[in-house]
Image (cartoon, rainbow, N blue to C red; front, top):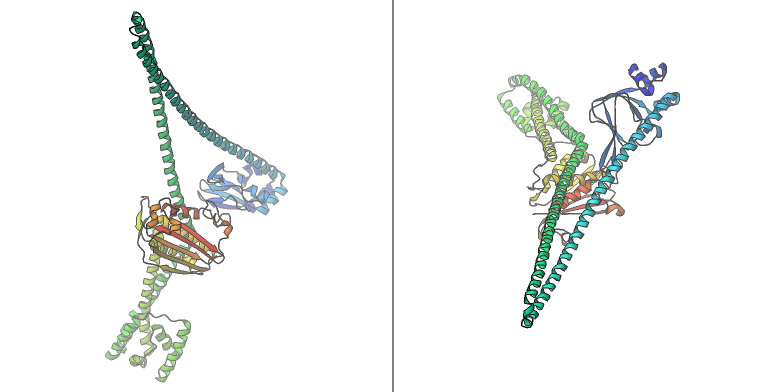
Length: 598
């Protein structure tokens, strides 16, 4: 590692003792491919030296990510944020598995203060990187400018072609009108000539010849006009073909836009699922832990039972064996769970009763009997309790009770884990058919509540009020994203503690004040499902309520929210020809979603 640092240009002039000191203050870290080393906008406390691998430096600009540079072995990155004590201006992502050395801010500053050669190297690196970044941004600006110029030229050409075509039509119309007037005049002249035929018989041949010449010229002109009209028809046909091509390009753009929107919805769903993975894992691990503990208890109890039952049968008479089997049957059906306070109270009462019958081992017997649910009437089992080996008999029954009780616990844990796995599988499913299907709105909401159970159970009370509603023709996966985004926002707004109310009902028609704004007014008389989600968080201020559905608008800190959640909700509801409304005041926020039953 010493030789590697000596070959790094930034440290090549360091004295040996300073280079040895640098080795001691650095920490080796490993970064997997596609993992982020740091992100744009975050404050940094470390600079890094690349030992192996490649790191891509990129910057987010609106909806696009621009790659600035690729740093390789021997280069230093992340130092600029340490120098100006400002958030990182770009993000760094591993293009391959990498090994790096990290240097803390204070140690890095000490290195600069004590070694001018390192400071000069850092200054050179910063200058070179600014120059490279400026070149990249200028190239990007030039590309955008060229695209804008091309679009402007295309628009002007189309506009000019349209004006030229209109002018040609007007000119052709005027020419035809003139030709028609000329023919009318010629007919009148010919009639007049016929009237004068007798008087001008001597000039007949001359007049006929003259008229023939005039008609020939008119015919030539008419043919020329026909050719000109034919050319205009060809040009118009070409213009229509170009227009058809533009329409096809617009249709393709719309299809691409829809595909991008679908990918954005799935990406948002996976992002939310990624945030919930730890909680969902806990929801699965808890039942698994319960199953593991119950199996251990059953194994121990079964081992003891197999050892104790033969000895028990030897000390019990046939009548006592019947009483024992009756006791086992009763405790096997016990499902009651008592609080610690109730258990202590029942033990004291049972100990008093056992003492009245002069039964020994009252403390241990009372403890076991209460756990098995035998505390109301012990007279059917007095022959067992008064037996000299009473504690041995009750312990055998207790071991059988443990097996039954833990088997019940395993069933409960399995059902809980299955419910979580089913919800996770349903939520993560992606319908590639892009076709509507019949679905029950309530089932989708319950799936989302199961996914968020780990966050809800820590301090949020959920009240659901579901009517018996019809299934609707919809995109179930996309509607699940609607419930996810709204419930996720409510949990964050309440900071994990509060009241979440969800109600679902069916209306005979869409409310008129909502249906009147629809593009498809046929939904005005169509039954609809109304979903209401309310929380008692701090509310949304009136100043921003009109902006919450705008893309990229968010009130959350940088890195917490993308500002796309409610924009996606709005687009999905619009896609279903539905409507979403929000009412908010301090202490209560209500979202109403209306979906037509088509």
